[in-house]
Image (cartoon, rainbow, N blue to C red; front, side, top):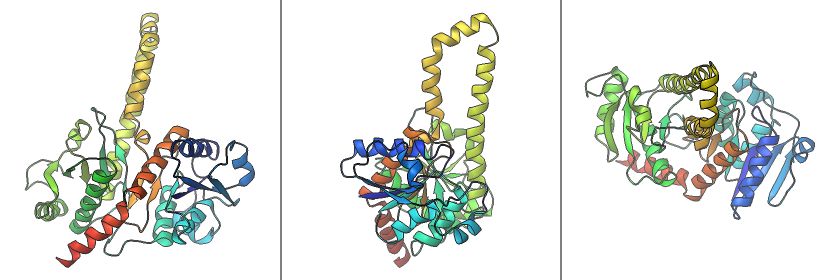
Length: 330
């Protein structure tokens, strides 16, 4: 199994990308990794090249680049070349912590969409209080959606959760403003009717306030709403820690208490960090394409590689293709 990685994408590239790749190689003897990027910079960190190859390029898609234009003009960018390895059958999947919009465009233009999937969905696993996590899709691949798209998101999310996350019968929830069947706009009402007719474990509408309680294993919504929820959760977590830090640093007594509780706070912060669960999968493409968080460290990159490996090993894409074909023939 070979995973192509954009070594130059993200805030901490290439150092943390390379460290994460070496950790994954050590852990999984069946894994090969192709690092795409500046060879000199990569080798500054690469101390073990066992089952790791490098494709040299100095061109990089920046976070400030306009996604579609950058993908079309920067043909030798590290992200594009990593996806090209997949398109040419030289790698089974690709991973990047770079520009999200550019990775989505690269996935569509280079890797290609599964026939029968109208629109791909970007899906991270977000934290829950109990630590199980839940898959949210879409979080920004498409701002608008039709009921049929949400149905496809539910199918893809269910397959992924069963095969990669090991959930026997994933609970599918439709994000809405209330739990009653008749609540919501035209999109959610029609999507509810479609989901109710499937063999999926559809539990109905779920509210945003219950997401972190683990109300569902897979939550589907349009990309506009999903992106707002994602950033609200992330911003709230960051804001809470800032307020907590300010409170604990306000007096000598609270500083002493903070010193005692420091390990517990670290554990809590990790639980609320969705990058610990791996990357965000771009579902609906012909091969796994994973978006790691832009600020990923070596551990987060390792987690994303592990997730990617499990997608390939469990043939998640093949199962999605098969299910879509069977659904279309009914």
